[in-house]
Every structure is written in C-alpha cells, then in structure tokens.
Length: 151
Image 1 (cartoon, one colour):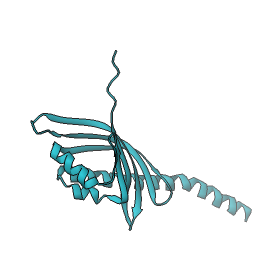
Image 2 (tube, rainbow, N blue to C red; image 1 turned 90 degrees about the horizontal axis):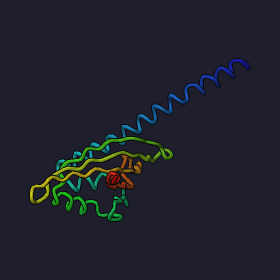
Image 3 (cartoon, rainbow, N blue to C red; image 1 turned 45 degrees about the vertical axis):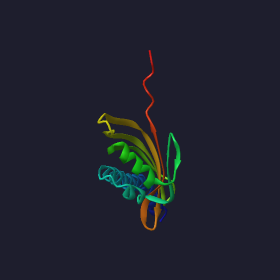
C-alpha cells in the first residue's frame, strides 16, 4: 500500500511540469490571438475593433501618458498614417487563473500626410484578463526603443 502511495506521488510530481507547460502554451495562444486581432484591426483601420479588444476600464499607456479612450487614440493614429503593426511575443506568464502578463515588441509602419514613411519600433507589456468568458486587454504599455548610444 505504501509503495502504491509513493508511486502515485512520483507520477503526480512528474506530470505537473508537463501540465504547467501545456497551460503556458495555451496562454501564449491567448496572447497570440489578441495580438493578431490587434494587428488585423490596425491593418483595417478599425479603431472601434481595437477598443473592443480592451476590458472595461482598460487602458493604453505610452510615452504621452495614460489613454482610456482607445478609439479616439487610434482614430488619430490612423489619420497620422499608421496602417500596419508587426507584433512579436517574447514572454507570457499567468497571474492567477484569470489574468496573464506578456511582453514583446511592436513595429508600426505607414506613411504620413506628405508620403514620408512612418517606422516606429518599440517594446510592449500587457496584462490580459478574462472578462465575460473572453480574454481582453486590461492594460497595454508601449514605448519606443531607445536610440543606439553615440560613440
């Protein structure tokens, strides 16, 4: 009987890392799905679609401050010429059962009113939460990469 208990504990212990990895892979898929929808809405110039990806009370934080009216912000970004976003995901970690923290990079491109190219790269961090059965963005921070140091 005691040997059977030890065997069960050993099996449970060995199975736990695989379960954790599978859960992390599923969380990465959640973030990939949100990032893909975000980029797709930028390509479609759809500020309301981007805003719909945010949770109630969700916010975007960038070098200009905290933005709660995401629709208005992206209307301005599209008017300025932004029309494409390549998003990469570097790290995804759970924050309990209904929240995720993730980091990555973005690369925004487009053309301004005079036709000059827009090329912005930077880092992002996000906190995503489960709201009403769907994953939503609670807070997204985005900031530009620092220029290379001068020699």
